[in-house]
Length: 238
Image 1 (cartoon, rainbow, N blue to C red):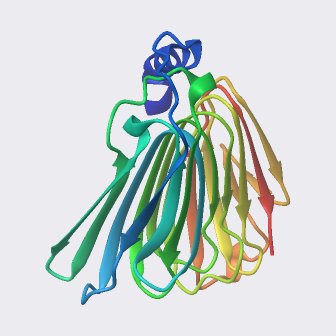
Image 2: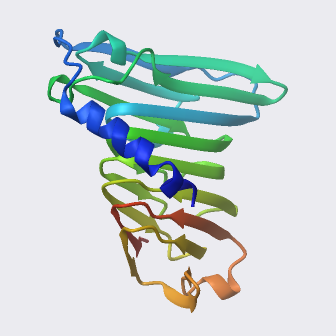
């Protein structure tokens, strides 16, 4: 399991971050705009990497990406890059500097909106963080999530128009994944030393679960989950 192989590194890094060995004096709160304007791209590849802090990610942007970051340590200022390759716009949002900071000093919050009207591959990585990803309404083609230490909520509820695959790897913390009831769901879980709670889905054996809509569904969310040390709950939304 990939998650367990790297878990020692994740935990070691987290202890390093959480211990406060590198305590930087906090500055006054600063606010920075996160913006990627619309252009002629027909698809997006969006890569968001939050090393430490809090993030709320939703749809509803008029441009490709809109949002803001509030932080009190200069090294945590967001770095936004955008390139176009053919018809694909490539978005990357990450910290400008190191995240090896004393956690007691950190105030870092990202509020990001993505555009609902363009197909996209979305990758989200989190370190020592709290993340709320409300992905309802986005035009997802592929979803990859890798969580480190902290709580994570992913809302995949709603009436999706197109099938896609999602890979979710969890580390240390509490994770909640909301899956839809109106379109098909196939969930394949691979357990680590954490625990899982599957609500409202039907077991097919060998770590495979489906919802009631799966057998007759034209649209299917194919979700693969690797569970690290923490707890994960899957439950049906609307």
